[in-house]
Image 1 (cartoon, rainbow, N blue to C red):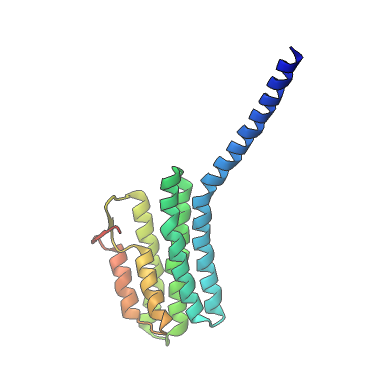
Image 2 (cartoon, one colour):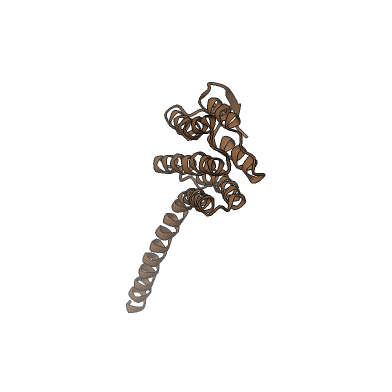
Length: 186
């Protein structure tokens, strides 16, 4: 009888460790999408640092790297079945920095001072934030309403990669972000 009790005791203690391991693995799985979103945000911050140090091409490349993280965070969350409201909000905040503020500061640091650039400087990130807030309140399936901020931010970063900045393009992109134009999802 003592052998049976001893075996059950070992089995129970093994089950406890397996249960703990499963809990930790589940927590790790749940954190992967948010870690990718934070990677997006970190790239946006690195882009700002590169811009402040005059490394404009590196700043543009960090915006592109942010897009890679942004591409995968939602997909991984859906694949793992761990879509959460905090993840959606965190994604929007990261997108404002990486595709709104970082490209705007990059463009501003490359450009010559002009009144149009000041308008672009304010309108681009504000329109992007408005568009993200509108999407969070009224999500769509199959299409976006207005140009997504990653597409707009990548456009500005692409031009900045070649040391070209156009406040008119930025203002136009800002207008498309807040427009009611249907843009198909990729």
